[in-house]
Image (cartoon, rainbow, N blue to C red):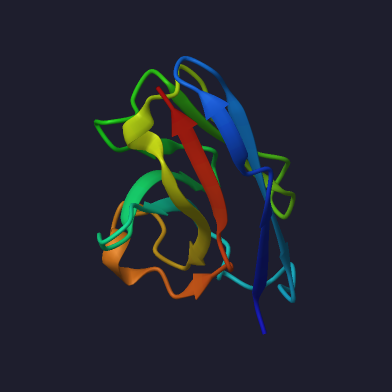
Length: 126
């Protein structure tokens, strides 16, 4: 059973930074469930949207709204996944979720992620 746990959410002012972390458990080294790791966010009243993904080779993809401001990274094949968020804007406010799926190499197939964390709140004030 794959389990994902996010941490690092909180509040920041516009232009500030936050760093989110995601730790996965219950995944064997031979399991392909973690071949794509993604960060999603859900603004109040909206459906979750894909923000960034990283595949097992380290290749990354980003939503246009966060390109140049957010950076996704991971510590090795099975290590934690991070989302460094810089130059934050009020529209970045929402619940951020870590997700995993075996979609390699198409990690931007946002609707097909099947393992999810509980989410962590990010609030950016103007």
